[in-house]
Length: 513
Ligand code: FDA
Image (cartoon, rainbow, N blue to C red; front, side, top):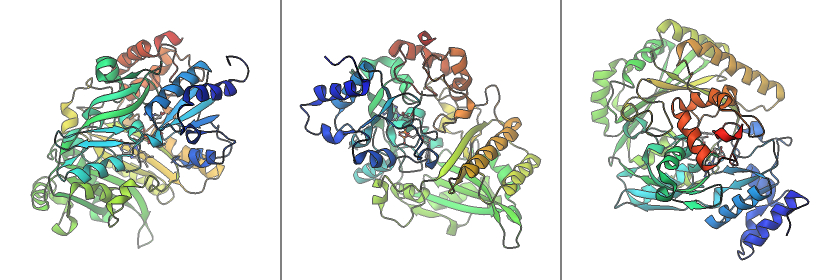
């Protein structure tokens, strides 16, 4: 009845007609005319680069309170030609869950965040709008010996995180979040609700790491919880250049992935600072989680990495649930901090990622230090995340995430800043791009691999109008998915041939070009 005229008005009416029986709908639809619009839009935006008045804004933000409303939003958006950007935790590095060049709506799942933990069967159902912090908290309420391998920052949303893989301090013992998903509920392009059985194994494979906003709206995930001991041990040890940081970081590359037990995850955070003598130095923070007690950890470190000089005083024993707040930087706070969706300090940032397959030599480490030292204090950071362990046991094609055996570690290159001026942003983005260029010879090649959850539009993009060719998309697609890219294209072609669910880095169907 309202198929012509203003598409926005048609969309609004479509929602009204299809949602009238639901009294809560007025609370679930936000337009620029509503007072709620800006706060609902801004609250989960993490990257301040995209929190500007001139960033493209959605015509509608819909915050469904039940799953049928998700289905209705898909139906009405498709019918009236509005793009859908779905958002769970809003942590996308490039803001793809809330920005678009085309007229669009945000389907914000913040109110769909129920978590049901079945400790007896070591499983849980978690809705996409939950954060990983909320998930950890609910698991901790039910059991002291169950956990889940997911991100370090508690405010990361389950929906985007699981869609791109998801890793944290238990990566080497249990793999990615996506490796531990056993069922899911997906609203497809027709608004139909599917579970693992009805979606089939191809689509179920694709949603576990093939990237968000591509195959449908994943409403809910069934996960396998993993055993953790009653006591785990954490430590953070700082070494500077005077304390042999260079040789320690060099040696770390030979043990962190292949020699240490799977129960030990030890990453390195690298940055520069002004030393007491006025000279710049490198800070190497060795930060680790051991799934066991301190005495065992000291034995392991004594035989594999005595050079670090880890002591009993460095080690903090705690229940696993407390380790989640320790690594998030909230030690001493009540566990309820995990439920705070705004606990992350927002900043302006640009991050990039790399995989390393051959250890980096000491002379090259010295060159890297020069870059970190030359940049303003703290302007350039690196986080080196060890692989190996369970990650090497899972085949490259088990799920779309391909970076398995043969990868020693992943690098996250970071620059973040607090002064949002155009000049500062341009300077920082240029800095990290140059540094990434410098790193090329020392990291994976053909393709130069990247982690999709560390979204980086510099590595390639789709066309704005959804007609991206296979060749164009494979430029970025093989970096994220390697040989799994082809299967993702096949699944996309089968489930969403019109490319309704799309963004700048969503897998395109073959029929769209
Ligand atoms: P957001 O809502 O922005 O969604 C990300 C993408 O997924 C978008 O394309 C979106 O449209 C899509 N999407 C969202 N919900 C969906 C759904 N229900 N169905 C289908 N598609 C959906 N990663 C990591 O592995 N380990 C870590 O420790 C961290 N730590 C970390 C800290 C901080 C401060 C940030 C900003 C980010 C991380 N990350 C991370 C990266 C994080 O995993 C990545 O940004 C996730 O995609 C974020 O998921 P959100 O739901 O929060 O993002």
